[in-house]
Every structure is written in structure tokens, then in C-alpha cells.
Image 1 (cartoon, rainbow, N blue to C red):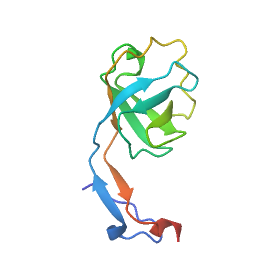
Image 2: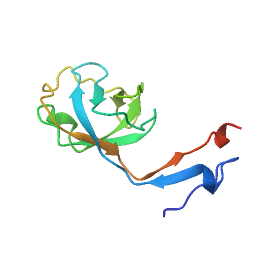
Image 3: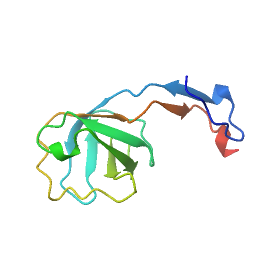
Image 4: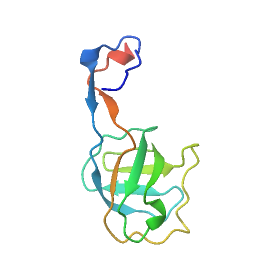
Length: 116
């Protein structure tokens, strides 16, 4: 397990180490910002770094790491790593496929201890 930075009020029982599990993509908009739609709910939150692979059509996003923003249960917009929203209006149209996963393994909080 990688080193864990201590966060005030959070104990080891409050977090779970999870490997990145890919989620299937069912759409990416040609918008500014680009919005990714997933087949099922995802666990991404604003600020997470994710990598998209295997997209047919909009290949400009393949094998690229983005930052997540504007999250809903099955959608999120993507920004570059400096936080600039990705303008996909000039990209090829999404056709099918693709997966999205955390760009690295991460810790998920299992309680609200960090908010205390």
C-alpha cells in the first residue's frame, strides 16, 4: 500500500484503498466543456484525475489524463490538468465505447470524519 498522508480527524478505519476500476462510457459531448456520460454510477468527485481509453470516434481523448468537474451520478465534465475545461467542439464525434478510471489508485473516504 502506498504511503498515506495523515489528515486531521481521519483514521485508518475511515478510508479504504481501492484500485482504479474502469467504468464504461456511453457518450461524450462535443461541447465546451466536454461532458462524459457513464453507463452506471461512478465514484468520481470534482478534482479527481482520470484517464480515458478505448473511445471510438472522439479519439482525441484516448490515453489522456483529465481532471473531473461538475459531477452528477452518471456524468461529469473534463478539464485539463491545469483546470481549463476541455473544449471538444472541434473534436471528432463520439461513436462508441471507451472506459474511464482513476489515473492512479486512490483512497475513498468511508465516513464523514474529515468534516468534523
